[in-house]
Picture 1 (cartoon, protein in one colour):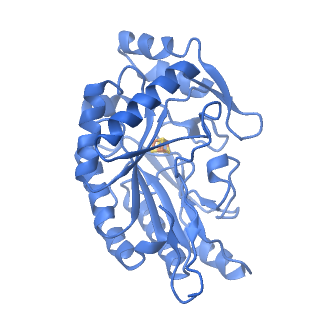
Picture 2 (cartoon, protein in one colour):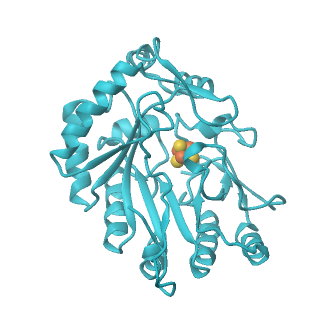
Picture 3 (tube, helix red, strand yellow):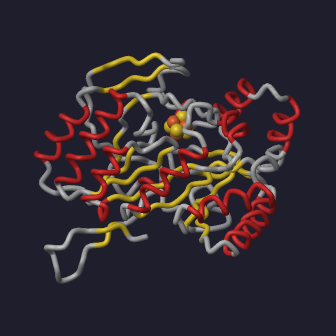
Length: 320
Ligand code: SF4
């Protein structure tokens, strides 16, 4: 059943843009759509001025063509491009996937890296493309728990847990630098020992060895969305109560800040999670942007590209 409205528009502004988010500041970014059919209730893009409203997605159908023109004009090409700061590049809609495919293919052909986070299935034609350019592709797949009932409450339109795990495995198998992204974890809902053991057991089976984590970061628009969308009052109260004494953290976008769980809670929880993960042979990366009061770690949302020294005929690869 279709639960979104797809609007097709022509993009007037540049395709490649810079982001003010610290973790995205190193490479240009592309948004294939405004709005996202995944409709995650914690989506920070809901607060952006260009957000078209829940259930609406605007696809810019000249993105791939415009990107080619922009690249041709550039004297210095970017090392890599990030897809997408405000939407998922693999939303399962053929028109969206076509634009994403054409844009990614143009970049890879030009020896420019492609980096992305997705909560969708990466379709087979992309996997086939990535086989040829695996050294230029870096991926993260969002997976916060292995319980589909909980997933559906927080991110109703995303791929099922089994499809996300299969996507992780497919990317690893073709040599793409791939990590799992457990962000946002919901305190008291997704982070019990039992839930994390189930999550880490499933992740390690895919061949992935790195998990980036962060707890939900509350901004006013996200709080509003959560209140509107969680009908289970007990769950809602539990979730919001844990932020009552939260810490305000700046996130590098103008004067923007959000509320994180209290510092002591995060420190204790991250230590427990790291210890637990290491028992599975997984390394944990904490998002330093949203936890700048306790760490400078990078969650590898984007990764620096490594250029082979002395041998400039060899292509770049992601440092993982
Ligand atoms: S997948 Fe990402 S962009 Fe899409 S709704 Fe979820 S959080 Fe927002």
